[in-house]
Length: 152
Image 1: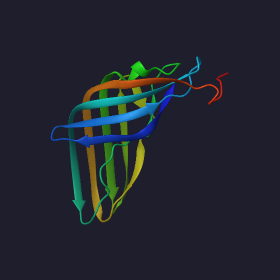
Image 2: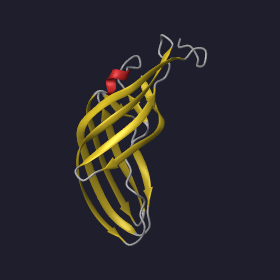
Image 3: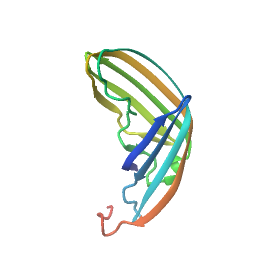
Image 4: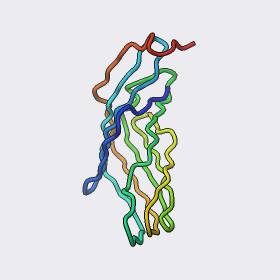
């Protein structure tokens, strides 16, 4: 079952690493429960960029759809514990371009991951990767019937 992003993620880069904090909410399970989980991920990061910037460019962002598939028949908050992997590739030509990225949190993988980018007067390409650990914290369970439709 997939999980949707509930709150905007916080992410950042430090000198030799990257961190990610995201809050996710699952769809209703067959037993009428919904989970809200906060996931913390951290790890060392490396990347390479070749850019020629003449003007303002849009800030780097993680290419992530905000949805994760925990690859389980039912929502599983434990699926987010384990390895953290983030890879991204991007390119721009005269201010227009795109960025593709994929994120793995434990056994859950992000769905999609292409984001168009817009800048002014820049040409370049970049690639980055992070490998670390992911931990699900602050797991909350709530009843979701009758607030959402009962599964068939």
